[in-house]
Image (cartoon, rainbow, N blue to C red; front, side, top):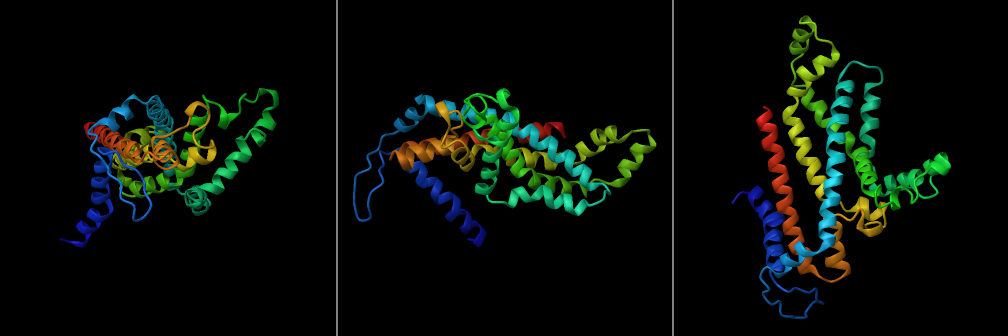
Length: 278
């Protein structure tokens, strides 16, 4: 057995199998040395997951997040990468500036976001009577879109770097040929750049979907643990609340298994769509 396979077994396979085991038993956290029976309950925990309205709201929130975050991420990252790939002044500075939020601690970025969009934040003071009521981050209609924009801004630099790397493999002769045919910059972008970086776009799509499915710190910190009426509760945040705060790790494990299946289906669909485009 190679070290890599052993690493995968220890880090991924063993926890996943244990999670599956917990999800079909009545399981409780206990003190060290305490032995409590964990009776088999079959699919009871999964039935609870699929009938819990908060779970449905959490997945709806993720759908809203993905509808906003994924297109914004792909479009902005590709446009900015194309601009930074050109010979412009201060190119190195702009590359570093776009990447800076990605390597900054989430807590620090949340503080900036709270300063801007908090109830007494800069934007509300600027808008005055035109500010939304309730405010941005405590508004049941705006909380999740605001989180989607926040995550897009935070991770944009990473995706810009991915596209920059992909652009190095797009032959300059293709742009020259398109220019000879009379194509302007916009037409070159859609006819040469977009098809040339399609494999990178597939990677960006899958990574963005996984990021959305794993949302935790952003809704937890920005909206105080899910916002009003669970408006920004994510499946992972709900797993934490059910498993740790409320003491139902079996429910949380079943939800985790469902979430893994959800991510796999969406990621495979994105890959198939991209391959069909190729």
